[in-house]
Image (cartoon, rainbow, N blue to C red; front, side):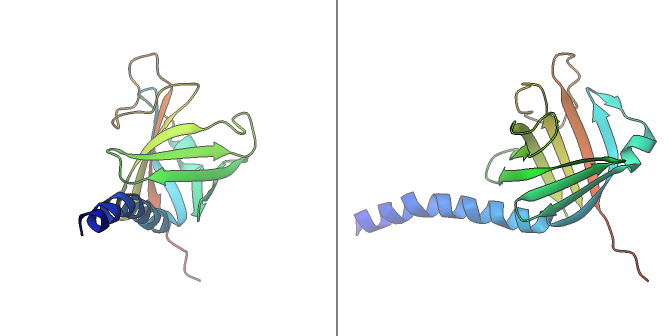
Length: 148
């Protein structure tokens, strides 16, 4: 009996972790609009914030900032504290690089802290005020479909 329980514990742990991550990924699916943004602790211009749109479909993301587009894949781990996200752009200057992020998903709000240029993954949602880190913190709200 003991070996059966041990096997269940060993194999169920990773399955539960995958399940939590899959649940979050499904909750993230859809269109998002940025409502706040800080880069290295400095609030960014309102025009820049309003220009940011994010779409998540499965494990793919597409970001539009004005006329600039970025797309790639994302992988999340909802079992970590804070929850982790790795994004890998498929084009542009960061093509193929893994960008280490943390995220928080609460209802129709998604907060993501992005670490750029070799900056280690953030451990909290402070916006990189140390002058050494390149941290971008964006809060998104789920974009509602317009009625016609």
